[in-house]
Image (cartoon, rainbow, N blue to C red; front, top):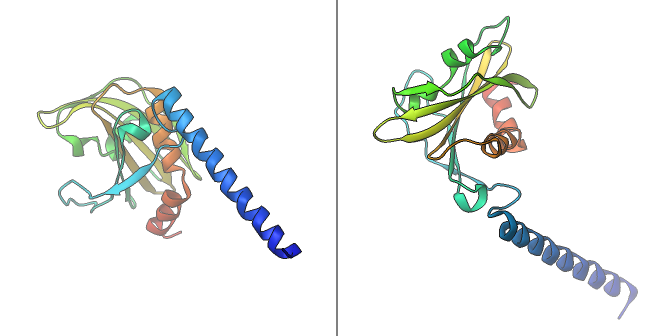
Length: 187
């Protein structure tokens, strides 16, 4: 065997070994915690009727990946944010958020708190949703770039916990979502 072929074979075998070890680590994580360390989000069809803000994007993280099924809906609302303060308080989040997409019966569970998505700042707030078609809990997340706001609604049919918000914020901070956001905001 020539030196180049030997080197190529060693590199190829090293890549296979790394892949196998990575797969074993992922399986161990699932066995230990019940779900994968990095949630897998798949895009699904936007389930809501068309309104003045248009369709957004919808994603789902299955229970096998996130511990519980999480549905995340995101869309921009151009020119709809308070240009001087952004999404700085719960009243502004309630005004710009999309919790009402889940139905008319919802109530806040607690005060919101500051969040960051990419270069944007805003708030996240938990809600109880009590509708015949959708009972559970949800998060409203709103972040802004100047006068434009990007809203995300995270719906689960279980109690919310910090892991659900962490998974949603990690996904919102992913390159895929941030690149889409830049295009939607014309940046």
